[in-house]
Image (cartoon, rainbow, N blue to C red):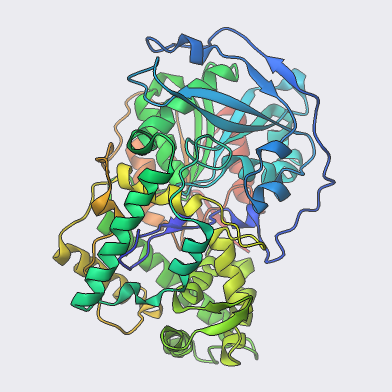
Length: 540
């Protein structure tokens, strides 16, 4: 999962559920599992495995108590996902600050599905779906049925973890209340580029940053230690506690940044890395925004061609006119939002978020066309539901914390951008490459919440350099809307690993129904076989 970077003044979000085909896939978002309560609690304990950094032995050798997963659910998505059969959950304890291992400790939520053939078991396959801010527990639970059908389910324990501050991990990063998040989504003044609009937006962003520090346990100290730098150290503790001498890892989207950073930090502890939907490791925030905008622009063009072939296409029979058609339908929401029930209205913000959510997977294009046809009739239920899926808003109005966590992590992973000219330039270039998202108003130079963040960044974009790393496998999709194809090419080259090209229009591809991609990825994870240079898989 990689959140989409917004061309607006508020926390340029980089995402939609990149593995939405795995986590949701449809607007129904309901589970077909039986709702079993899970196994009886069991305690696993063994000495630390592999090298142990000084002062961390008690963490690397800790016991885990595996039990039913229902108590770990902190969102509607999690409640549904945790009905999967054969899963068990536990808590892993790690230091808040690795430089102070005797200081406060925090916990991470873990979810596991055991290998079905223990006698042929290789170890654990650790999963992260990206975000940053997405739940690895929910993602792993959603993949159980898929993995059980292939050799991965026989040979590996599938393990998902909620990174520090996220989901079932404690404490959670918490910034906005449910009511405040609803209000933020309904406010279409946030892209007002006038001087008064910029002042208002920056006040909102400063307030958001302050609330993150006030409402998150340990405050500034927690916010300073939620970035990739610290999460990969948690991953190494997890590796040892699971009993694996070396890490086998599957990272989607932002999860590829975790994978490459782990390789830099613990190169001798790597067994295998599959990195799907790569984040370009060397891009600045502005460059990433524009590159992602180009990806969405390309995906929208593909949607427009698909739609034009249908008699019911909301944007008409000419793909060249689709951008204007989309703008005409959505821009009027800025002044005239459409009621959707329960006192809510479809804003321009939510309409475009719903569209972007649909562009992540082709199986959501049908819903986008339905939503746009509804909009012609002054109805907005489908687009609002798509935006709710993106924002993790449940039917009772409760939100997950992914959006809060995303901002907190991004603000310490990347350098802050404070130059108004640089901000304006990025905004203007964004709508040039994704014109369907041009709202027709003056671009805003307002700084986002990271400019007011209470702690400094702890990482910088850079090209990884890891001599002697075992062969890695990067999977990159030609028309990926969120992480453009070239980013995967760049990451594979930087790691000295193999590249698998998937020809399709979606975000991420492994274990999502393409036999060619799955065959290559599974062979690599099991026995280290890498594809020959130039290998390509075709989408449907």
